[in-house]
Length: 458
Ligand code: BGC
Image 1 (cartoon, rainbow, N blue to C red):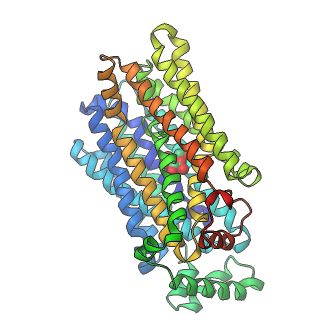
Image 2: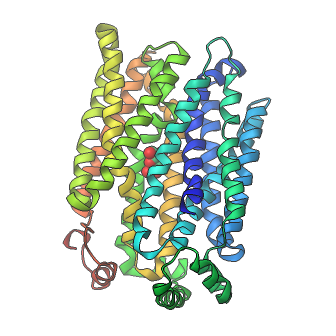
Image 3: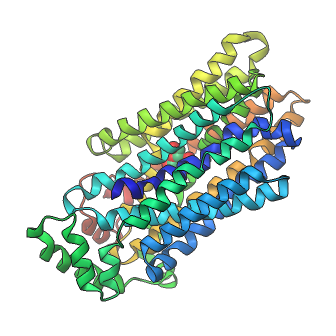
């Protein structure tokens, strides 16, 4: 059941990543500018923000299964619409539409998985979700590179069509799967809930599970409203932590590499679109491998150590990218390959730290009564900062390039220096404020905020 539902995670990764390989061909085919590319890429993120905002209320009202079914339909239609889009305007509309599916999946899938998992393995199944996003990204890079064809500029359309396949798997799979028992309980449909639980839960624990779900639902019905959350002084630290961890996760520039990787390779001098799209596969592979590494490290090393390891590594590799760009003329091939290697190092440091940390911290720092509101503030912050960075990347390159008398390599280096500066600021912020939540009970974290404790003293 979790495997089918997790296809939602795969699609989230696939549909955010597929654009990277499509861009070089789309630009040649439709004759579009870097700024239009930024719009097409960003519109999906804005759609995702809308999807994430509405899916909490929708999945409470209509049920998790129905909402994921709708997301699967959106993925299906969105993939076809992107593929047949005749011009930039259609592409932007299609991407907003597809983005809504991504936003819904990013919220409802982990929720559904958590609610249909046996208690024993719930944590593992839920954390697999982040891994599946990276597998989806890799799937998109692989499929893009298999389709990329220098002799056929319209090959980008096929890249989008491929998204139809996982969408159909999700759609058919979800038609077979049952509704979440927890949601059924919240609608007083207890008999149906028990019947479904019999299919996956040990019969000996069903009674205790039903009781504990009822208790949880009782707690959840006392949820603090958004207004109350903002008014409570002791909510300042959890809120600041959730928003700023997502700010730093995005503002170190991760998605410029994930979405625009092939375009960056082209700026580094790999003129051939096909080769640039193929190089992006290595970004996807490193991302998956180091996400797996982080699953092992996160509870061993703790959050703070992993944070500093990742951020320091990112500062160094970002400065290396900038160095290679500034010396491209003199370094030639060494510079070009230096950029690829530094980018892979940068991805590895991100995947092992900030990738999973961002999503983990937002589930840990909020008291139970605001966990729902809190996580959605975190994910909306994530999509907002993501959109801002992705929407301004080429604009920043252009303005730095103008500043350096038209030297685009210097311009690109300048932007990576800005990301390195942000990462340095992140290190200072983390040193002052990032709490060590490893092994802490969520109730103890809540009590710490209530008595006015500082995050670092947790
Ligand atoms: C981030 C995404 C990013 C992905 C890369 C996630 O944690 O939130 O924005 O694309 O990691 O693996």
